[in-house]
Image 1: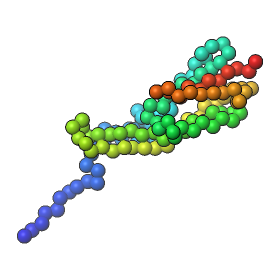
Image 2 (image 1 turned 90 degrees about the horizontal axis):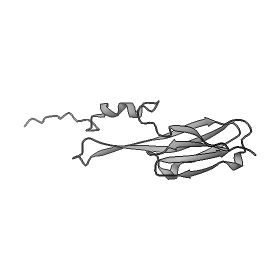
Image 3 (image 1 turned 90 degrees about the vertical axis):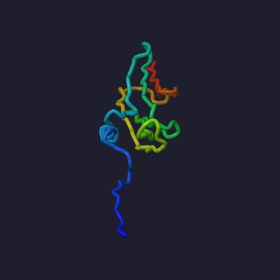
Image 4 (image 1 turned 135 degrees about the vertical axis):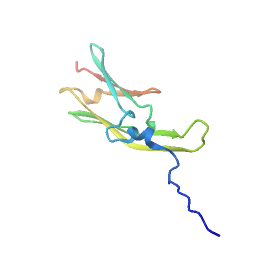
Length: 125
């Protein structure tokens, strides 16, 4: 009896469609992208996209020069809709946002919505 060797990959999924997601620049998978708005004459808000992030992993650090947000982002990839087999890609992500001089750090506050971390920076009186 002759045995046949089967060629098997460790991951039976074709990852070429998601290679851009795991590139170092984020590819199209760009958690923590943000937009800055002057929401009123006395404050600025920063809307940070947290859709792919675990809310419990979000960490905000503020110093006189910058605001830093870090989190664990994940993306679940399935071969097709009928497949029960999937891969959960996770990686740490962060963003650093420069702050204008003279901001009262103790006045900065934040809230989380379903899709965004909203950081409010009031101007000093």
